[in-house]
Image (cartoon, rainbow, N blue to C red):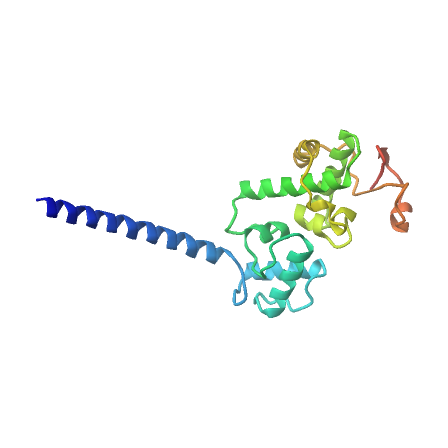
Length: 226
């Protein structure tokens, strides 16, 4: 009787272990399928190539085939934007590219956008009043809605040459609490700028294009323009 009981326990344990292994393997396969790497093909790869090409990281064909040139461009994008440099487009790199994929739900995508918006507000708006921080976030969101700019928060922020804080690395620091609040306000539609698409600090800017634009209003140290 004791032997039968031991055999039954062993069988149960082996069954449980096999179930755990099967579930783990299923999750691993799902996660692997959600990442894009050399050999991947399809519409999402085409979107990745398009984003990288528009932002100056990729000069190859937009053909939906993830080849060595695409992998090299992905590594360059990851390196320049503080991501793990592996040449594989997973959840984090997809979010940075502003592409929604099977690796993240719409809710997770919203949180990723809010986090990026908060960091750009924090970096670009240090020392600015709270209203000025909301205004910076509003400019980003106005660009998202404008046909003249990329149509995602990530696209606007990572657009080549768009923000000094991305170029000098300040964007990759943690956001302040006030910037996080300002990001939520701007993301939800608050716009103290009245639809402005640009801002600059007249005391430090040397950009003649910006300096030539009519000033719509000033908040803190920034002039805002349409």
